[in-house]
Length: 77
Ligand SMILES: [Zn+2]
Image 1 (tube, protein in one colour):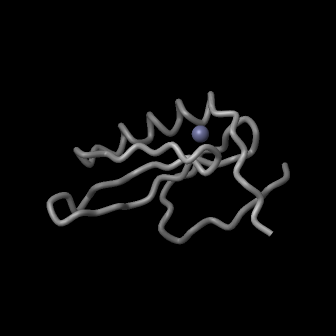
Image 2: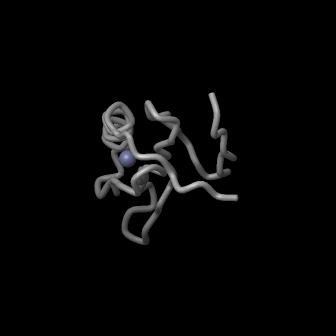
């Protein structure tokens, strides 16, 4: 597997797409929702902010997205 990237310290879950990009879930708290999490695809920049802080919804989106997304992240040199 190529394209290993550093795992940011705040990332709780990471899903690998079929082309080697990642979908990361990290805390994204707001004043009203301190437990809020969000998922972002590093391949296509799609994101799924979770307004209800139900982390399994974020994980479900990340899992489903990682299975279908074929976008590759722009290389960072
Ligand atoms: Zn994507």
